[in-house]
Image 1 (cartoon, rainbow, N blue to C red):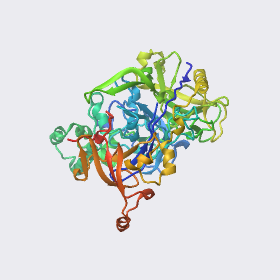
Image 2 (image 1 turned 180 degrees about the horizontal axis):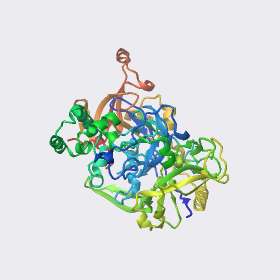
Image 3 (image 1 turned 45 degrees about the vertical axis):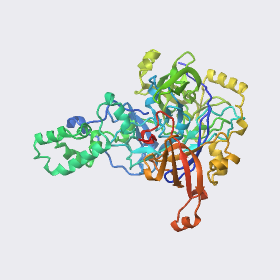
Image 4 (image 1 turned 120 degrees about the vertical axis):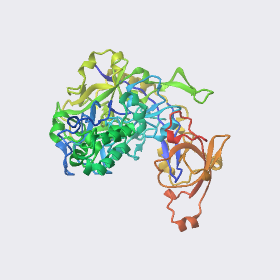
Length: 599
């Protein structure tokens, strides 16, 4: 099967973020143009099916499984497919694996089901994405943002707030490659707690993810349920041998359904939970969630041999580089792929009807999803394959010579070879199952950039694009938010009055972080416009509970004496207080806590 990389150019929207206490200010660029989850959580049955012989191991901090820090192998959650494992002990707060790229999906048509949406995060990952979407904001983070499963009692990593956004020095007035790659990268994953070597990595999908899919996965215990089960175990531990069975059955039967799933079927099992799992019913529910080095070597595959940095190819953005020397014929890395259809690529024109809840689509296409540039397909196929493994989406085509790596169908036991015999319609009903591997065509030196052949179709499309490239109207005046920040980051945000004589570039827009659940005594709701007027102080970073909204600065003030008296630190010497008018987002699928509506 000949696989080629298909090409599409589009533009993205960026943010320059300034920050304040209950609000932070931002400059937003006007643009042009969900996870490997299992069918069910581990649950308590009988001891033979719950408490395996392979229980958690205590490992030293410097232990590193065979020189590899990140592995993929069968998940410890039954029916969850592949999982990700740490090959080294990681302390709480440390970065886990390599940072991810984030590929935005602009207003995808959610009327058409596709597996790709099971692997994306909504705008809570990138709150500025709500400014470039009218209805749906999603981001595909194909490394540790897509591979880990979720266990609500064992989640051990989280998304970091640190990230990078830039165009790799390119500008839309002169560079044809602008818009061909995602400008969002360095999205790190951070350990929420100490992680043992060999432990499966879990990331929190959110309770809503399981609530929305309860008809598929059943009732899944949440973290609070496992913690309540642990407390019950500690209270009755010394009485488990004498506790009548009917009393325990009554306790289980009167408990909420999620707590029922967290409780062991018999009280006496708490003794084993205490001795083997340090009293953690969550850990006991998945006894193989920490694997031995030998098990990972026999059943897993290392996905920790690449890192991302600026590409050696001019205009290519970032690329993938080898962490160590690789031999000819050696498997560089391995990646599962998500199967999705061509109907996910066009961005359809759509708008909100007269009724606020009415969502109308047109057949007209206003652009193509950037995801197209990160997927493989054949010219005669309607099926696209999106790799999701650390760093593989940074691998470029070498325009200056032959590739040093080739892709092929994986020889892994997890690769579903039988899927290749399915029709496109049948394959698109499968969420995943196909896998590819990247093989060294020659000896590769440490820190050498990795290249593959995107295929003849891509080469011809890129050549045609270079020949026909014309900058968009007014592109010479375009200013990206991150560039504006580097030049003007120390300046106060301009008020509406100041912008009459000193306007921001047309590509920028002010935006504010705002906590929807503010004390109503500190803000004024303007019924006629649906906006909120509020006074707020400037601080260095927004709290997690706040959401990004369009806003206008009405006024600002600076009281040096009061500031010195209260020892207020002001980032970049910004004035202490702003009065702003915050407008609601029109995005239909903004996170629930961000709904700014007057009750």
